[in-house]
Image 1: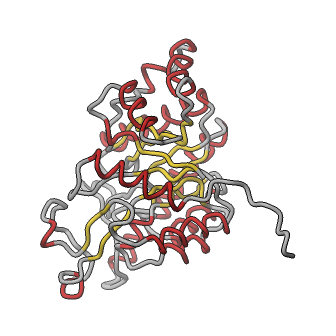
Image 2: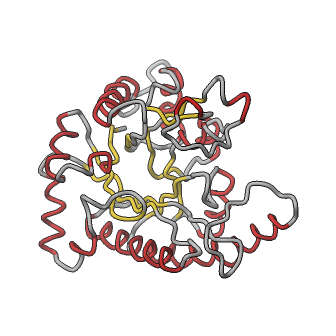
Image 3: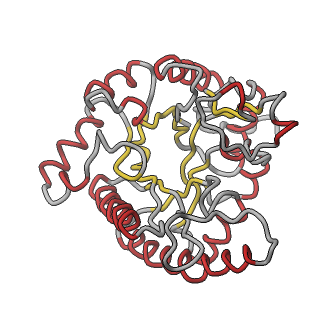
Length: 320
């Protein structure tokens, strides 16, 4: 296993400077933002594609520093009911897939997206309950008319270019837990897998260890991010929290740097279970901890992960 970082954390820095810094901090791999909601400050596929020299120049920035590109990320909503947003995010996703092929990067990370409730909707509609029956009708329409047809098309495109789609299970989108990820994977095929981020599962009350076991064989990339459930607010209001992330004292949960939501034992169990289910890849630090600066949160995460990751190949079971 390797420590990585989602490089949009340092989007205000030039790419070369950001790479030098994360390398000096002990990172071995980087996940690069190429479109969607996060910044594409370090990677604009439209400026690189079609020019082999630009592709080589971009790739050499990482190779020369001994850094692996674990994934290109394009976290968007290509199913957005606003056609302009949907078109923009879809085009960015396709270009990201094409660039991943050119760079020899297997993983492209995105969201499943979420449609509206019908043709002509203005905003996404994330269904979270089965009654009144209107909600189930919306959900059926979304999956049958929008979700499955779209991802069949994109799945074929990704397969044709040797790329895997790593969906980040995130509330607000149609794929938000293991059940919905596996439902889409059953429809589209093994080109669909998970970018497994335990922080999104904690907030839903899902046990990430059990989720890893459920998703064995479907985990293609991993984010290292924690969540702290507030012991005062959560028991009163539950975790369906829409207050701004910056109102920390009022919220039921907060994203935290690894180790500040759950202790060493959880993270030791987490990396051990990753190996148990066959994942020995990168844990990419995603810093969204509003109680820490980017640098402090990142550096603490690197140090913490270095102490819990399993980095060597399994040895012979000499005691057997």
